[in-house]
Amino acid sequence: MKRSEINKIMLSADQFIQERGFFLPPFAYWQPEDWRAKGEDVGGIVANKLGWDITDFGMGDFSKFGLFLFTLRNGNPDNWKTMQGKLYAEKIMIVDQDQITPYHFHWNKMEDIINRGGGNLMIQLYNSTALEDFDRLSPVVLSVDGTERSFPAGDILCLEPGESVSLPQFCYHQFWGQGGRVLVGEVSMVNDDHTDNRFNPPVGRFPTIEEDEDPLYLLCNDYERYYRAS
Ligand SMILES: [Fe+2]
Image (cartoon, rainbow, N blue to C red; front, side, top):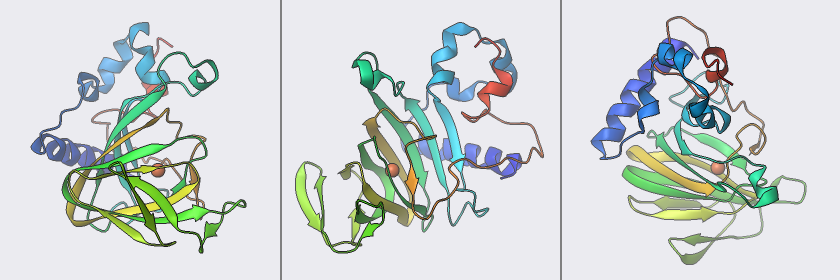
């Protein structure tokens, strides 16, 4: 993706998030030059990959296959071994009308996906087989706002504003917006986007960036180039 496209997506996303009455933390607005001057006290933002995260899944057409995310909180995956520290994560995301986040499941992370307003969020569902293929036979049984519901394989769950679903590990999901842009929340176990996404078919999780202008704000994958205190 071009940096100019990422900058535009950031501006538009920030406006939409605020219009919906949701607000990002202060570090969202630190400029690249601010990051160069930051000390060890902000190392937790870098280590846990908090902040802006925009992807076209390596497909080169963000409006068709893409997702805007901002990680608000997260812990270290190793915390699960000790049961110490932060064991949870939260993201805010934007899903545009007909903009697909392709099929994937998570080996480790269970996540709640929440429609926080705008259009409807459509989620298509399959269980995974033992060989990590789509199970086209077994129904997908999920908790939708605390109520157990059963969906035939490949069925589409429609989450209207305010509704949410708990997605367990090994549950394939792809999603898109219907009827408008959707603000989506994610509350989950610790998140590790470098190792815990099983896309089917495989796609890229993070885009390659063509630096055609300066970054407006840094993506979580940009920190290592600007942050010197680690
Ligand atoms: Fe997911």
